[in-house]
Image (cartoon, rainbow, N blue to C red; front, side, top):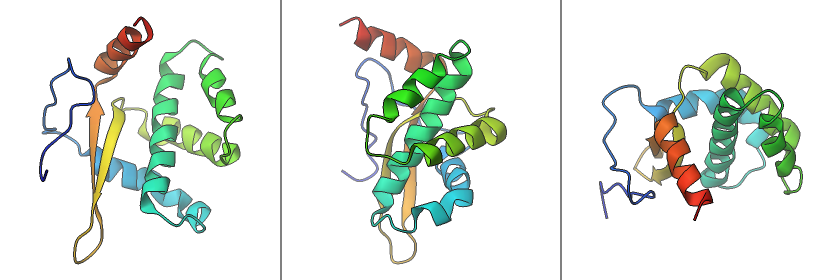
Length: 137
């Protein structure tokens, strides 16, 4: 299954990104918080947490004032570091707000050197349309 992109949203074509690489952006996004993840054993867990923060920040930017906090408050029910999540959301908004694609999947390829991250994103509009369609099913 090498080099095959999985389409999580069946009705949306997956297109290889020719512009900015969101994998690199995600790595830059995580860098200031590296010390917060010292006790995390797996790269996958770090990236899942960071992607959650990234996408929640995107939602917070497009939802009416205060409604974005409802999704963050729902995370209080989970066994996660909500303080770290809020700090990462704030950092994404202040440093990466121009990058509005939602990250919907990722893969970490083990190599001889460092692991290589690749991500799949959806444009904000496409993501929202898909989310609305899923909610109406």
